[in-house]
Amino acid sequence: MADDHTTPDSAGTSGERPGVRAQTSPGRWEGVPVMPYKQTSDAPFRDVTRQLLFTDPNLGCEWRYFEVDEGGYSTLERHAHVHAVMIHRGKGQCLVGMAISEVGPGDLVFIPPMTWHQFRANRGDCLGFLCVVNAVRDRPQLPAFDDLAALRSDAAVAGFIRIGKE
View 1: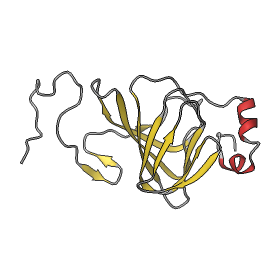
View 2: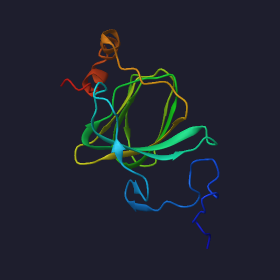
View 3: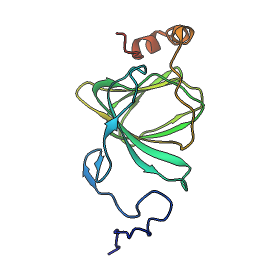
View 4: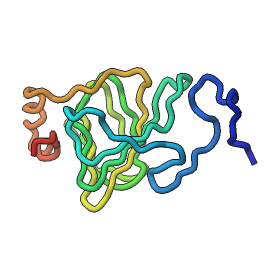
C-alpha cells in the first residue's frame, strides 16, 4: 500500500501535499475547507459554496468545486479566461452565452472567454460541479445595463438569469 504521509520536505515547493484526500461525504473532501463562494456582496448569487481542491504552481491551473444549493444560483458573469466544468452531483441548468442547458452528473460544460454564464440548481436538488481555471486570471465582469438588455432580448434567457434583484 502506498504511503500518503509526508515529511516536511517531501511536499517540495509545490504547495500541495502528495497523497490522497478521501471524500468524507458527497461533495466534501478531507482537509478541504468549504468557503463562501464570493468575498464581496457586489456580485449577486444565492446559496453557493466553493472549495479549492488543487492549486499548485506546477499545474498552472486551479481545480475547484462549487455547490449550488436547492434554488440557488451562481453570479451572472464573464471574463477573459476559460472554464472547464464537469457536473459532479445533482441537477440544474446552466447559461453559456445565449444557450440554456439542462445539466447532470458527468456532463461537461466549456465556457469560452468573454461569455456570459450562470449555473442554477433545481428545486429539491443541489448542483455540485468541478471547475478548472487558469491559476493567473482576470476578475469577473458583471453585466452592465446594456449587457442585461442584450441578454433579456431573448425571452428564455430573460426568464433564466438571476441578478439578485428579483
